[in-house]
Length: 282
Image (cartoon, rainbow, N blue to C red):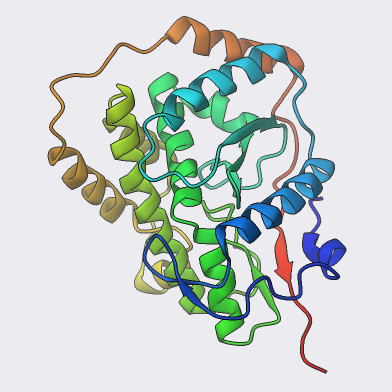
């Protein structure tokens, strides 16, 4: 099982990465400078890689690198270069959302590549994951935890329902839902700029995300209501000034799916998200 408290190993170097709150490039206060956020991401990504099964396949890796680089050219206001790796585990089984860590690290579950019906759907989820990094949701959430003096705040990096099963304050669930909507909006823009039909993301979520029933369930859910999510994306898509979208490459995407099936993945259990720990005052 993925370690619950990854940062236990980096406590000596990460008691608090900034002393004064600063206004983030995106909305919200963030204690982490871009330099320190990048350093944090490298530490977490190294530990995450040790605790998961990285898929060793040139076919899969080359595909992720090529598609990721294509999207990176069209992501608005990216602060970090992106690094993509495929993993056998599915940390966010609710919608198979990639794990995103500060500094541009994206870990793509094989389950997502299998669940997507075509390249455009997969591209939408990949662009969504990149949106979490651009908006710096992980360090913004960690900053919120510091400001309310929480000693252990599960990181939002994984998104997609990953906080389920953990003791999360309701305020953080609300932040998580807002973060998902922000990432959706940026994904729509990125897909359109890169020549992919952004309606494919809505199509994927409509099929995969289960509708939340009841007011209480919605309050405790880390995901926005599916209908609200689809409506927000539809509104964002209507505002785009795009005449048409380039054709996708189904043959290449199908080859990746076939390669994953040949390798026998996905086959691992869902995993818990990493936790950013800091020392409590003595």
